[in-house]
Image (cartoon, rainbow, N blue to C red; front, top):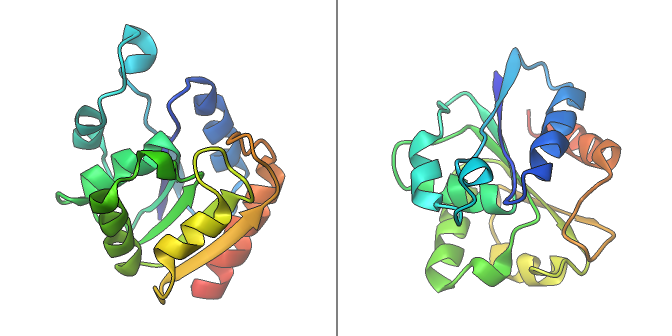
Length: 168
């Protein structure tokens, strides 16, 4: 199994995601991290462009944060279908009804761990719980916070590893 990381909008999330992926002990063979074109170009993120670049297969676990969750859902509308997914900091403010439906369909197709801050400024844990309620393949973890940063990679590591042990 390989891990595939889809960081958030800000380039600082590249180092954060690298740190998290390096810490995870899931029996993986390795990991890969996608960097985004807009980090170098200064343009707005292009979700469709980044989704076309996602390179995962059926045996991969994808770990995505914020913008990375939008990239993953867009890629999943095509041929990308990871076996497991960890979605951190879902930016619900960017999820219209169609995207929320896509999120539910994606999560219903594989074991998916959602990690959301209690009062994340882009969508709270309670709001996300309402969106994914009733999906048997979903595990929802709440972490303290309201800044959408998710800086405690040790806590995230523990949540991800414990979840993976229960579903494997």
